Amino acid sequence: MKKVLNISLLEQILVFLGLFTVMSYCFQINKVNSSPFESIKDHVPIKRPVNLFNLEESVGTIFNLTQKVGAKPVSTVQETNLRKDENLSSALKRINFKKYHVNNIIKSISILKNGNKILSSLPVGMIIKYSIPSNLTGGALKLNYTKTKDIFVWQDVKKNYKSQIFLRPTRIEETLIKGVIRNNLYVSALKSGIPENTILEMISLLGFSIDFQREIRSGDSFEVLFTKKIDILSDLVTQTKPIKYVSMNLSGNKINFFNYEDKFGSAQYYDENGKSSKRTIMKTPINGARLSSRYGNRKHPILGYTKMHRGLDFAAPLGTPIFAAGDGIIEKAGWNGSYGKYIRIRHTGTYKTAYAHLSGFFKNIKVGKRVLQGKIIGYVGSTGRSTGPHLHYEVIKNDIQVNPMRIKLPAGKNISKADINDYKSHIGKIIKQKIALEKSNRDNKLAINNHNIKKILTVN
Picture (cartoon, one colour):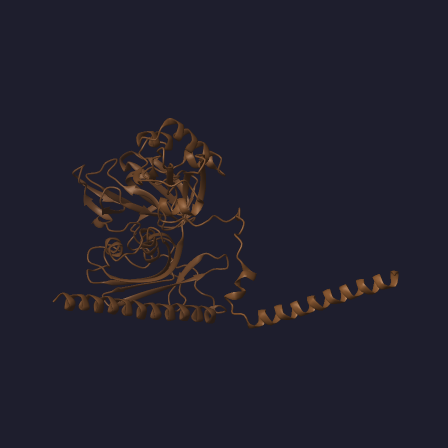
């Protein structure tokens, strides 16, 4: 009897194994013959855990953000700006958020990383997009508190306020801009679409080789190649990288400079032959100004008698930026008698430069601070003994004022013979990129013109 039972059990096991083998074989055949869409169930995507070190991307509207985070639906979205002498709390009260909501919104932001620091440093003019809560809809805020980040505050389905920092999405764009000078380089470059910080970089770079007051004529042209980062949501430039290539055509005389990083990774500029763009001191430390008084004897406009004028005067609108003529240490920054607000920079054991009649100093300018050539140090004014807004500029050699227009200054370090082939190869790549962008710009312009012609023909 026991033997019969054992045989019966063995038969059951053999049948089970046989069925399992057949099913496995069928499953393999089905998998081989199936389409990618039929097998998609084997690869169902799972929601990735939140990466605590990478911020999620922001989106365009509060409505889109509420969907992104699963917030309580909102109603009408309005917009305001953070006013002077206002914090977020007082701004929310001004736009009719009730005290309960204000307190909970502030609390939700304060528990973010550096939340209290963020709340205390929100910039004046910051855009606040908001939806006021009601019995049916939730409250929400979107704060564009830096160029690159948004804070989103919302109510969840349980009406609790939550906050999160989002990174604004960006795109990188290589840009070549060409322009013609009609009045001065600054205004013409601005009108051509070059960002202001890139214009100041151009002026700083070209200021060693070009006298902006005497050498530039209407009709002269320029071109600049640079990389910019664009905010996708606002389509505004948020950041630019150092210029790759810049050129100016002055009455047929073309000056070209190319970016070539030194061993420390800093941007340096050289012409096509590897000669440095730099000089010890810039020819003119201001742009868009008129040379109103030269170095030498002149009748003083206030004192009324002939007096030696030991510098150059550049007439310019009040508040025009003034640049450091060279790398150096601030030796004096403050009031200096008839000079008014005054800065003096020591560049080497031989040279110093001085800037007088300023309306004010750039932030953090103080005695003993190191400044870099081409960086803003102050602004045109009319302080001290002055008849109107202008910069009085002096170059001091061995403690004696000399004529800035006549001194010959040593150039910066050129490309070494060992590196010249690498440099030539490098600028060859920049030129190829420039040619490709020129073609792209022409194609885009042609496409736009063809589109406009088709529109005119359709209307007619």
